[in-house]
Length: 159
Length: 136
Image (cartoon, rainbow over all chains, first blue to last red; front, side, top):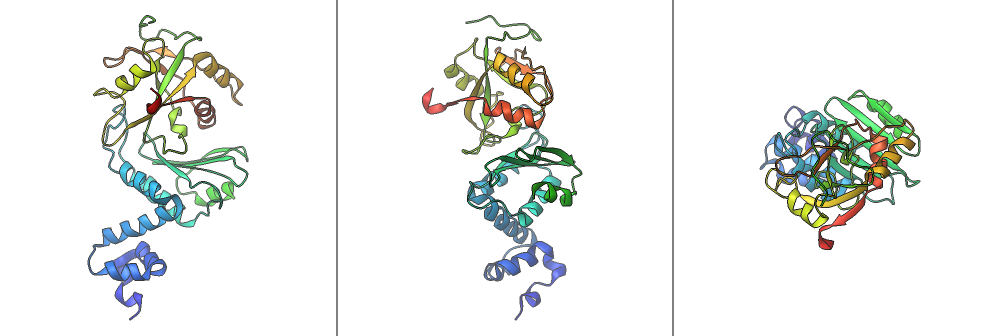
């Protein structure tokens, strides 16, 4: 039986389809047990771990539990928009090989910031803020604020 | 021990200030630009309390650390004049200052009032001397 027959797309959605493509055995195993949300979480975990390692996964899941008012009382809880855009970025972007894994940080706005080194060892940062994306590339002298969904320009600045 | 200054009083250039480095901004490999990015960044005056005392102060209830979600991992130290020099030498020069801002739980608390952008925040981050807990 094909995976498509087991997981109709109207039930499992795009993330889950990706899991079927990338980890068919795992998707079969969990299909009958977990809800759609759990399945989505599995897929997110897969992409986070692939790009950022287990530490990155642990940190992101911990950040998502930070309550409103964390830190000095003004910290915002995790922004669903920021998280979703970061996952989309992690799925598509190829980080430089041979460098340390990228780091992930949490911002007071509830956004996520990624930092890594380019092949030339220069600092690169992308911040997924709730209402914008910030990109910094030390070697290219890039320090820009983009519309949140302007992935095209984001990838162009990083290429 | 130096005197506690009134709120808004400039902190002298020769003083060093400390910045709490917590789990949201340090992952064991890198420090985030968020350490200094934005306005009214909190710091604490080393002239009032030692680094050892600051570990305890930062962990007081209502202070920096809010376990289990946010934990204090390191303390960064920088000189006020050095910080001002970095701001002045930046591509778009910024006149960085430190102002006293005593709080109930830390009368050595101060702030950097200027809105610090990412590029300058990275330079300040890289200039920090880092204190580990094992060395306190």
